[in-house]
Image (tube, rainbow, N blue to C red; front, side):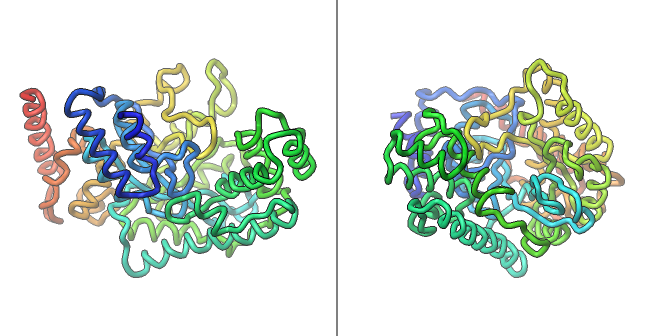
Length: 453
């Protein structure tokens, strides 16, 4: 029954997911599913099937698995949409999991127009995030901005698919029928298109020598049998040879293809989130000038930085990427920037959570936990009473970023998810010390109640 219910968590039907999660919670209450004590591992950058999750995880599935693993904080971040937000936060509260939600997109940075940053081969363009959004239902300019992000991405995909179709004939896709059906709300990505091409080719040629010959001819690479019909090797090859720089369907984007980073930061802050600069590995021309890039991003509103640790080290190897990771985290600490991190899970083989027990990551783990607690605290305060990390209230109540980080870190560490509603009555006149006292009293009460149970 447990496996069946866990499988239903990935249904495209929201009602079925909600029913399955309720069933699993009931089994946990009966002691038939063991949920561990909350630990210190975190992942607040996981994509769901509302953009692309390589394992097909819904927001409810990720929340459930995060609770089963005892994560200290968990968070979702989909491309160009907030479709996962409400479901994930509802599931997290039900499970007693500290949760937050955001989005990821790409932006143009005029000051770096000639330098590559995190988008390979694309000068001036970088991935960018907003985290800790309080709600998905936006109004006015923010609603229009969010809708435009989605529409631009989908139009870009349709145009890309048209060019790739010409090259891959007789394997051709219909965007609505073959691609958008792979994600619940139709917010397809390049990775969905790769999967659709792999499945369409398998339909036409079958999982045999003919399929391998087709892909070898069209992609110009030697295709290993283990890649077929839709494993990581063929999906990566399709994307690299048809959709990325140098591929047959690739067109170099101009500066109007993505929003300005400054406009994205204004949108994120106005919608209640924290604007976040993303960092890849420090090897690109733009990321070698990381202090300048951070200055530009912070001047337009960025207040945190995202890293993906697992991409940046090999256990036992003290290489340049690991040194770069330590350097950027040290810089973030010096600037008072919370570090947002996670494994993404939008490509085959990516981990559910980083291995914080490795020699390489163990010294950084407390910093990552602090960043996750800050984002979680912001998310709850912004949702319940508008007193989030980048609010006017925060600007007035803290003399410097060190004080602000300490408050949100302590709040995030102390707050029990089941007590979040106790922060609903706070106002602009509330003081940080009063808020912590409320949370600490609630936490002590919750602990006593749990011991009685």
